[in-house]
Image (cartoon, rainbow, N blue to C red; front, top):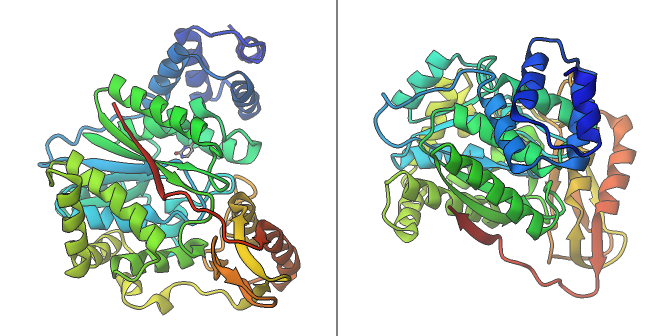
Length: 435
Ligand code: URA
């Protein structure tokens, strides 16, 4: 069958045989299926979905588009975490060193910004010199010697996902359960882990806006993991407002450092600890979630988590002095505050709109080949439930281009909804799912 026929049949809702999906994906890898054909196919999947068999074949095809690592020669459990993506979600930056400091190895293959969400790799690259493009040999060495390593997909690890991810980012084909599940799981299965903790985000800043969809996504990924023999636990966590106060690459690095100092915003800290506790339990470093939590708290108190972050940064070529001295991170030239036009309680923050404002400001990409400005972003001075007086600042914009400020300010002002009473808040961790 030709690429045209595959697209045509998926467009019309047919269930495709595993061999055809596999051939289509492999053809893409060899350059016989063009980017525009893959984009059209992804859009067809967006509307038509993938049946269970198709999803298994697609995930396997993505996984086997590259090398599947075996880290079994490195002693100890290897456990990773992956987030489905949010705004202000800098949890990986705090979690990898924290969990590694508690004795569980974290081989972490992360992504770049996607749609309105930020990406761990882009955040890490705001640290001068930090390299995310390590070879597999270097990655193995750091997982063994440091206990954690954060890299991007190499040309050899799930390369099909790497290319599809970049296409989806610019073709509005992200918010699709089978595409997200196969993207995440193909990467994670390739990296050589024993177990995985998923942070499935729900709310206005997530790809899944409704809890019911997030639950299906979580279950879909758990099923894929189980099918491939990995233990997977998922937490559904709140993304109805950006996590923490910082949105933007260097600003988020600074906030992640604050979490490891014990001085971070409570929500980022809470999500980090909840996921970390699951990782320690899966990795056998703690018998119960409570015991795991005490270990994590001790690693923050004793400074071992912060020291681990410094070690990771320096071993990956970055300037580790940024950990003790945030002024060494890139800074934007301009700061501008968005002020409340009426008084009231913050009832809602449209976090997708905040994320898209970040992209418009230069914190994310508008095209596959756009460059990111690591210094720009926002500090959310008010969050849901806070009270604001007329004229009080809601958000501080960090920008390098004055011409963009009016548009960004308009977007942020529109993202905030104020009302006469404080809204009821749902818990940060909404649900826990496992096999
Ligand atoms: N994160 C990923 O790695 N892939 C997706 O498709 C969405 C979030």
